[in-house]
Amino acid sequence: MTRNYNFSAGPSALPEDVLKLAQKELLNWHGLGLSIMEMSHRSPEFVGVAAEAEQDLRDLMQIPDNYKVLFMQGGASSQFSMIPMNLLRGKTTADYINTGDWSKKAIKEAARYCEVNVVADMADNNFTRAPSQEELKLNPEAAYVHYTPNETIRGVEFDYIPDTGDVPLVADMSSNILSRPIDVSRFGMIYAGAQKNIGPAGLTVVIIREDLLGNILPSTPALFDYKVTAGADSMLNTPPTFGWYLAGLVFKWLKAQGGVEAIAEANQRKAEKLYGAIDSNAFYSNPVALNARSWMNVPFVLANADLDKQFLAEAEKSGLLNLPGHRSVGGMRASIYNAVSEAGVDALIDFMQDFSQRHG
Ligand code: PMP
Figure 1 (spheres, protein in one colour):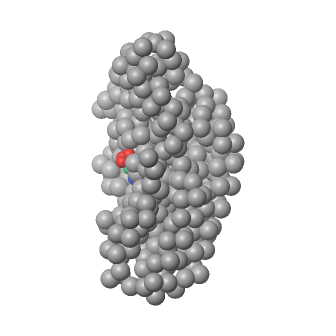
Figure 2 (cartoon, rainbow, N blue to C red; figure 1 turned 135 degrees about the vertical axis):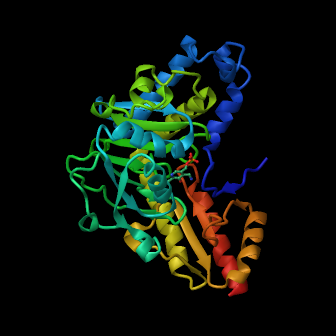
């Protein structure tokens, strides 16, 4: 059986080796005669799997000891509410940077709990760049500063970590976690839905500095309280055990690739090739400022939008799947997460060149 190249924005491609290992272990996990899915989350075996996944993530991201790692449910979107619930800590206002659709959703949700101060709004330039540090009108009294380092839909990625002084920085890394090395100590909190660079949908990873825990809005449900979740090792209730296990396999795969440094080199090469193919061919274009082009999500449009349907249909026939842009923006988008091989990017570039020659 041949597997196609999958450019889906999420849920997205998983490493083939991981899927094969999961398949091999599916019916009989480590000789116990049952599946990992059929096991109590409180069994020593699953607790071991869970702890090993956490340790591997800590190793990969070099997470300092004063940070908790939580394995939660509800997707990144539920974090949009949990963040103000947990991080306002008696304050009434929070700073948000708006670089696109996911920032906007985070802002809308936070506004239910506090006064949201939009410290830079890239709507003004149709979300084609990230603000510079100098453009951020930060409020020193803010409870935290929230931003989206990589906007999945329009492919806008920060090339720096904002300096927010003593105000904790909160990052929605759903679509670029583990794609390149980052200094975790610069952040108060990092969170990510799993379904891009971590594993299957249904799991959300939260990395949070310990001193930020424990001062919640009074109405916060126990399950949404990071301190309570941390105190229960993310097992206050039944966690998404299969997703957690699979994330653990992805972390081991990433270590075997040489870790985040090595995957970053591959990611940069993949992205540069693809943007090169777009920029050098008048048939295609990408509107994002050069220093804000995402390594993970590469949107592009055809000079002649009448050919969009044909492009997508022929791509699919060539084994290049899930290239339509987000329904809100149209055009195309190739998501080239960690598990999308360089061969996949090469195949896409070959197809794009061939298509443009035939239709240009
Ligand atoms: N933030 C970003 C940057 C995303 O890309 C997504 C999903 N594409 C979300 C948040 C929402 O994630 P979820 O569906 O897990 O709630």
